[in-house]
Length: 101
Image 1 (tube, rainbow, N blue to C red):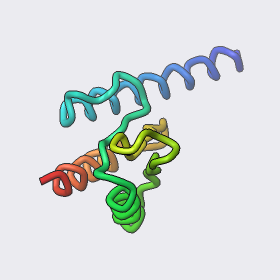
Image 2 (spheres, one colour):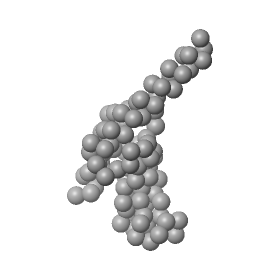
Image 3 (cartoon, helix red, strand yellow):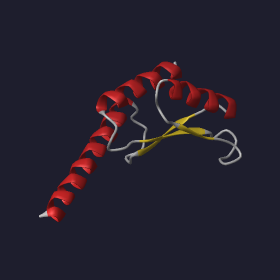
Image 4 (cartoon, helix red, strand yellow):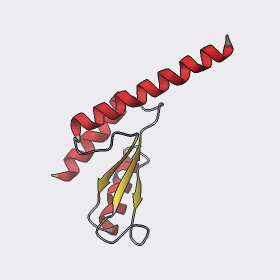
């Protein structure tokens, strides 16, 4: 019985993460079909500044910067988790869209 409850819980978390990915892709269609997403950053300085801005809003988004990635290919990495809510993701997406204008 415990294994069945555990399996159901994992399946529920997996389904929730998939729904978050769909929500992300509805807003940013060229994103990944996985729970790991990336947003282009315009260089190391811009990547760090954007990550700090998101951190001030309560989001732990990590910049992947040169020389760890090729210069000009810097990104912010977003990991969607089962504990994230749809409202949190909507807020994050709004912040991303605003900053990309």
